[in-house]
Amino acid sequence: MKKVLLIVGGIVLVILLGLFLTVTNGLSRGKNVVLDGVDLSEMPNGAYLGTYDFKRWSNTVNVHVKDHQITAIDIVQDITGAGITDCSGEMFRRVIDAQDTRVDTVTGATVTAKAYLKAIEDALNN
Image 1 (cartoon, rainbow, N blue to C red):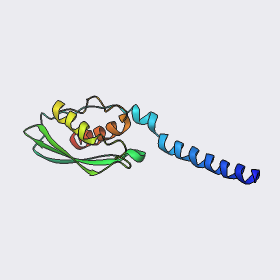
Image 2 (tube, helix red, strand yellow):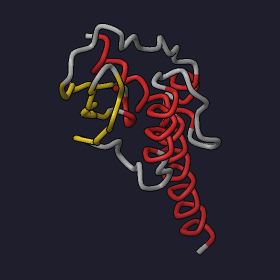
Image 3 (tube, one colour):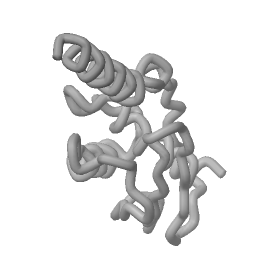
Image 4 (cartoon, rainbow, N blue to C red):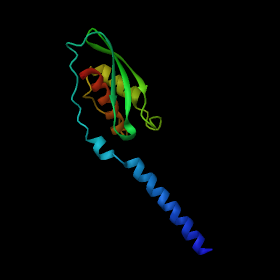
């Protein structure tokens, strides 16, 4: 009986360790992503598709520009598990208010927020 409990406990421990490593994989690199900002002074009116591709934070957004202003941002493909730390609405509001991607991120969702910001930069800088 003790042997069975040790085996089951070992399996549970390995599963938990695997989950922990999966969830934390890439956090350090994601937190250190540098935001370049955007220059809208020459940006024609239109909708621009942008993508950020990094592990589970990959996403695609559509950024709408009118009269050199970001007017709306829509998610085309969301970040896996974004519902857990849904910060997209707040981040998009901050970008629209600042007309730039160099804004404060949402506390507790830094990597997710930076992933959205990099997709916005990709849309407007390419």
